[in-house]
Amino acid sequence: MDQFDMVAPVLRPAQTRSLPDEVFGQLLAEILSGRYAPGSTLPGERGLSDVFQVNRHVVREALKRLEQVGLVKTVHGGGTKVLEFRRSAGLDLLAVIADHPEAMEGMLPLLLSALQMRAVIGVDAARLCAQGASDGLRAELLEAGETLASVAHGPELLPLDQRFWKHLLDGAGNIAYQLAFNSLIRAVHADPYFSLGWLEHELERCDYRRPIARAIADRDPDAAATVARDALSPAAELLGSIAPSPKSAASERT
Image 1: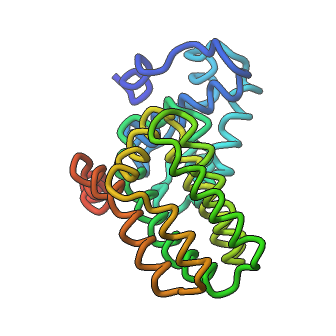
Image 2: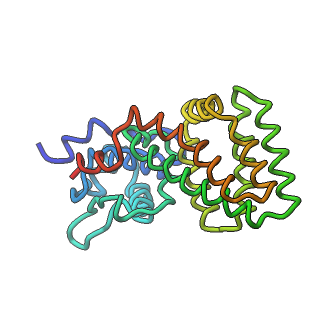
Image 3: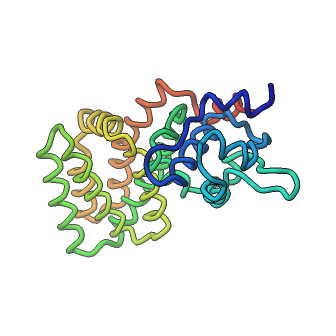
């Protein structure tokens, strides 16, 4: 039994979305789950065409996208090699995963990492916002915090929370933080039920939006950073209690 025979039952004919996107999504899930391990070789175009029941052009498009996000590398005469995504991919992979929920299987360590990075960026962004935000933006943050505080539960929390952080990151003035935060939020919000759960958990622990907004309005960077740190820790702690650490997950794969 060759490698393709071993993994073929996991794959299925492409049926939904655009065909290249469907093939890409399934291969993405197989690679991130470790069923195609780093260093292994994907089946050839002909084999993938047969199992997906698509033509080779569709397969080539899917493989090209995998290479663009740093998951595989085409080796002349050696097929398509699977890469260790922790060393070859970038934050754009988070946005890709958000668009392909089937790739979320086994990705709790990645989500934990995203929440931890969200906390790091959020703390420093709150400090920078308190230092340099305009009066108008400080007022918008106060309003966004009050609006969010009036909603205890439900799907309205997600867009309101994103609006709050959009204002805060605008005030921080760090473009790299904004771009990274966009990718992080897309990843952790890929599953609305999951993201709503940790967001409600944060709000139950601490109505942090108003204290952060008030510290920023008071131009107190230290207070803003402290409140943000206290506020953004619960979600990562909650997920960390049920998910393996990113470090241990990486060890299991090597």
